[in-house]
Length: 121
Image 1 (cartoon, rainbow, N blue to C red):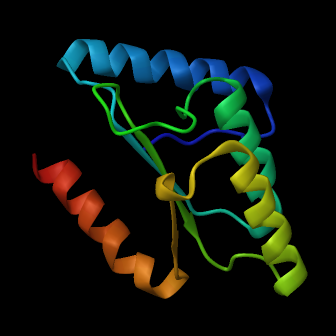
Image 2 (image 1 turned 180 degrees about the horizontal axis):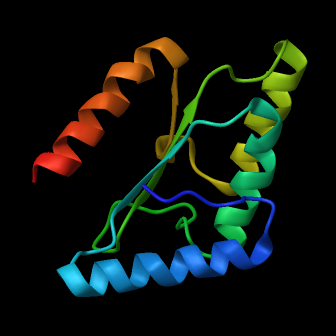
């Protein structure tokens, strides 16, 4: 878990440096899942900046390279048009196989389980 102001460009560089330190310290391969539980108007901005700063690997091929996945917690837009715009922004940067959309209420238990696993290990 990492909290940051996602409208601060410098925060992305700090976040990337943190990821590299943690992965090196623990000998991790670099596979990453990002859980974005933010308001729909922030999805396009976050999607673009995570890719531009190389935090999320774009269009991975499931080979021997680390992979990245993004979980977008719904509500996924405010209406059909805004949902289509969000999907179009995501499709410009990532393969569909990298993207998961999860309902807000279904995600609640998932996040609780992640926190439980994180702090019991």
